[in-house]
Length: 481
Ligand code: NAD
Image (tube, rainbow, N blue to C red; front, top):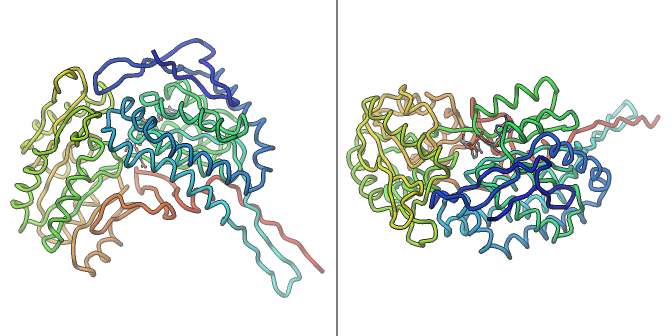
């Protein structure tokens, strides 16, 4: 049995209590590893190590910090096969997807922020007529916490860690207890790249025992969290009275708005992906598809036909388009939402059932599912399902599309399909979302601000925003008279 341990002060060690959590391979529904079930004592040790390492790391030259992060990026690329297969076993996603998306993005995160830090400037203000000059210092905060979810494990873990380290903070990070494996492997990579001990500490364990202790700790200056809106709220309750800096990337229920004048084939190909990629477990998936009435029936037939052809299968099969969802709990949650949709009057146009691939009958597989006939207010259309399940709804006018799109407590992303330039600009301004894609989906430029509106997030990461979040600005005013 593989033992996934904590990485503290450059060393691998089990939780001090000796407790472990079972780690499942969702493609088979069996335990394949154990992870340290850390608690307060382990968190304390990790925070102490990070605190001890802070002075050295924050005073290390930008060139040196950047070079180490670039080395980490190179090592991730070198270990592409090993990391992709580990991610797939841990999460259930197709190996080809981990190879094409998750692992390359993890190295891009390190590479991007290793370069960005060399361009991160402070400002100067000449205070004319008063004989003074003001300038800013952007200083590392100290010990910061990064907490990430299970859907894109290494991708999102590194999205937070890389900017935090680049500006000179030391980090205590926790991956999801559901997918701890690639974070564990990252520890080895950091040692190989020459990251000094204590600069990055990875604590394994669940949210209540390990995560909460990290967020409560008085020495922690900032928390960057990606996960559910519910847990974001719990963390805010703990951290806000202690005045820690907070950045939250949370849930979504994103509209995919399709107008008759769209490039139909491009829209259909992309909509298939934005509905079911990563088993629908991407916070940016378009789970509410709104379609102009004039093309509703054609679209419905075409999407259903395409969805039925998607192969649901084991992650190691290169033909598999939809792998296993991440856990038994999540599998049951998704199936219960499909039942709820029926109770709420929805018609299941395709899918709706679990799948049992030969030899993997106990794995957590669900058919791509398309549902119509639901009101926009029902729970199926309001709550995040986070699986291969989408609803489709017709609309008649641009105003109606906008009203439906914004009729949500979430505001993470939206996709808009139209060839009308004016409509694209008009709608993009009015949609409540942190990112609006027009005639594309999931096209990401790491320099752009990333985050959500409403219950989808607080703050923006990405580009210089992330470097700003992980630093404190200080104004120095010097009189020269
Ligand atoms: P989750 O909120 O259950 O867990 C996320 C992380 O928080 C895990 O590491 C977990 O152990 C930890 N945690 C749980 N309780 C905690 C507590 N009390 N204190 C501190 N840490 C705690 O989310 P999940 O189920 O792992 O992930 C799915 C969710 O993540 C979905 O809602 C999805 O939309 C969201 N998500 C958002 C984005 C984004 O960029 N906005 C990206 C990916 C996923």
